[in-house]
Image (cartoon, rainbow, N blue to C red; front, side):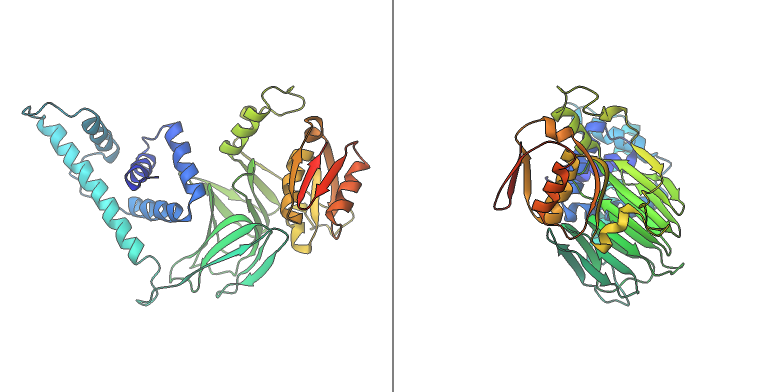
Length: 361
């Protein structure tokens, strides 16, 4: 995306003048580009701390005038009303201040005693998980097919990381230094706690499961809306882009076979899935840390995505019917062939394996 277009969309978003289509366009860019997410965060920070004294001109109203001015340039030689000219100049100055502030943050974003901090990107391929301990003592377990970006050393005031995929966090408590996780559409602020974050870009939902402590979740598209979570709560945030794609894919199917995604709430809070026969605190959402793939009443279509990450394979359905078969179970040390054979004990289907490609029919 061109930089001018990106800045325009971000400014529309922060000023509250963005349409749904523009918001979706911006979200797609933020999903696709780590650099874009960083720029958005810099602009958002500067917007929240922008200087006062704009001569009493409302920034949102001034921005609308700028857009009108850009869209309807008066004929040459005609004079613009004085108020419109002043509002236009005020808004233009405001946008320039945002850009200038972003540049200041960009080139001195995470200084520590005048020292530039190095950022590290840790990625896990399919089939592989990692465990790391950050310099503040925070432990992070990174699930398969995930990416974590974090500073080599944290700054004086905040601890921030960026996640794409799934991770389990045990955050070292430091009340004066909040820990913030940027995960696609969600920003999660914690002080000291243990929780799981699942935010694979293509999944129909993002999830946060809190086991102990307290966290505050805000939506990147609406940062003023904050959701405080308590222990043993699970927040599910519907990924509009993915669910719209699913709805389009299944539009010809009966409603009983395919949920009406547009009728589902965008955000919901419930309980985690407790594992039967396990310790009373054991939940399915972070069982992957102990190499357990847990699924409960999952459609084969959704489970296939998890199997692809777990076994590093590609699964395609040759017939539509198996997509909607539903399964419950736990896999630990099974091979992909053993896993498929176990599923065959519940539903009737066939499969063919050729290298890393699996066809279900």
